[in-house]
Image (cartoon, rainbow, N blue to C red; front, side):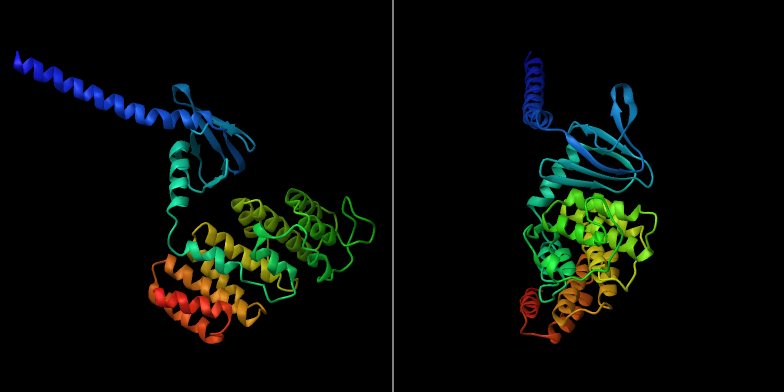
Length: 326
């Protein structure tokens, strides 16, 4: 009788733990399902959503799915997702539980540590002492003022063909710049794409338009499509967007913690005609990439080279403080 009572008690405790566990997870599940859906902002490749009976259906760009959905990515597929303020990027083939992706993304933002914390701060220093608005807007694309009239005042452009919405003989890039200055980033993307689709357009013009398309996508926090258009376009060093495009590509890789690719772009950026201060900042960012690759010795060497360029500049002082913490 006692043995039977103990068995019943044990079963009761198991039931209690199950109920407590379920009731603990249930509010999380209800919270996720009650929230707005997850928007499939951008897709390259094939994405499927799991349905009842283990069936899979293809989903397209612009689709909204539940935050508890299960997605499957085919080979060579890239997906950009948005869930409220969260932006998530899937870059590898496999099966993904969105509830887990959302949870891990929130946790990563909450406990952000390592070189990524310094990237935003140092990247924004690039281009601050130059009159080129392209570099300045690249460095702070998502924080640029919509009222920055210097964008139109400090840059000269060659005459080009007409694009929708602008006058005859007016350079289409002036129109793109004005849209960017107003903060109308979707219109910048459309305008840049329109330039690339013209009948008579040079490879250099395609590159220039691609830069503005990418920087406007970046301003909307659409990192994967921004990176993709840059990766698929040849760069030309004889146009004003060359240096900014190289830096933007590095920044995109850094934001996605692809330290090796970012390092290569930053080393390429050093070959551009930039100020000593910008070179310091680029070297600082290179050091952060080395840290991300767990190469602390290399990071320290690069920081010391950067500091020696100008120890008294604001970048030099940031480097001194960082070296002391290493």
